[in-house]
Image (tube, rainbow, N blue to C red; front, side, top):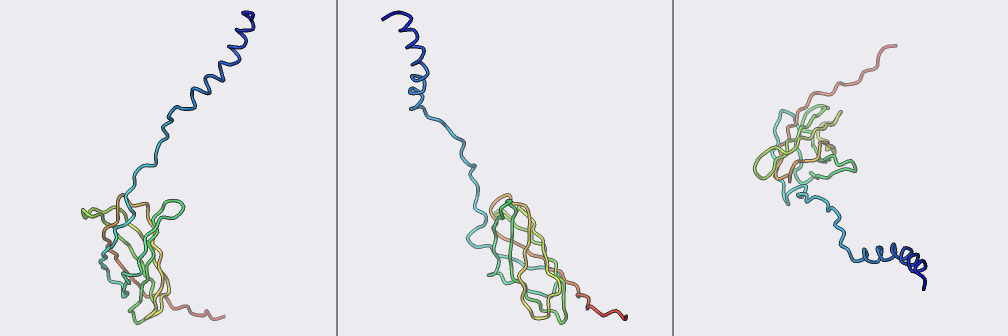
Length: 149
């Protein structure tokens, strides 16, 4: 064999040798960061505010939407004598009693005695939801009237 042929063979096989030697290497890929659960197994609630309505604690769900925002859904039953518009603000707490998120939402034209599903939204909580306080306020919904004409 000539020296030129040997050199050309070595140069041609060098990339193949490098590729084969890299087959057994360990590549470290970053892992997703550890995240805490969204909520505790049970989340006790406290209802405050002057709104004439009650929240059904068993109806409350907590989830994250596709954008990562917090979505809280609950059932609200009006105890008012007339049609009401309700606003709800929720403060969510971790197991140490620190606020980790606020959510807001409401419902308009809720008939007396009726139950409505309300959606509250907020940013992703900074920890696990362990308890919640929901403030319900309400105002009489205006009665639509026909204008003369």
